[in-house]
Image (cartoon, rainbow over all chains, first blue to last red; front, side):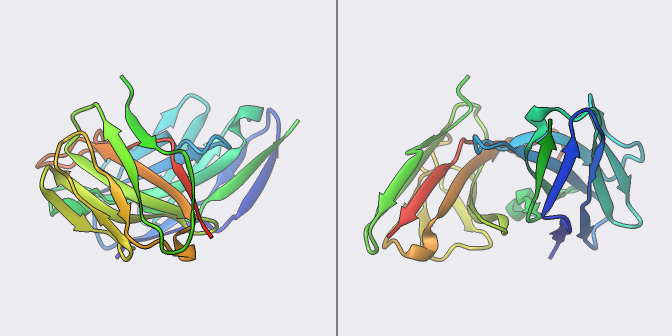
Length: 120
Length: 117
C-alpha cells in the first residue's frame, strides 16, 4: 500500500516571501500521479497542482511549482510571492496510474496535511 | 454547472440515530467516492463506485452503507451513529476510463460536518 508523509504539521511565511512544503511518498509503482490540494477555512478542497510521474519536467501553475524527485520519492510544493489568501491546509496526495487495474486505482491517498499561515 | 453538491452541510445526531448524507453531481462522472476527514489524519476513503449498481469498500467502511442507483447520486448512510463517526465528510467524483489519466482529477463537494453526541 502507498503511504504519503507530510513532515511539517505547521509552517509560516511572511507575505511576499517564498515557502516550500515537503511531501514524501512510498510506492512500488512506476506510473502514478501526485497532487497538492489546498483547503482554506471554507473547507473546500481545491486542486493546486498535479504531476504525472512519467514527466520529468516539474509542474508549475502561476506562483505554485513543484520539485518532483522520482528517485527520492519526494514531491515538494513551492509557493512564491505568498499572499494572505494562500493561508490554508495543504494536502499532498498520491494516485495510481497507468493501465487500469481496478476501481481502487482511483483512490487518492492523502498525507496528514500542513497548515500554512501567512504573516502580513 | 453545479459540480458536486452535498447536503446537509451540518448535522448533529445522537448516538444510535441513523441518517443519510446526500451527494449529487451533474458532470456525468462515472466514479464517485466518499472520504472522511479527521484532525491530523488527512482524508480517508470510505466507499466508492464506478457506476450505477457498482460499489466497493475503501479504507474505513465500517458503520457506513452506500448504494448507486443512478449516475448522478451517491448517498452515504449511517445506520447507527457513533461518536467515532464525528467527522467532516467529502463526496468526490471524476471521469473513469480504461486508461487512468491525470486529467481524471477528483472534484470535491463542499463537505458535510457531522457531530455525533
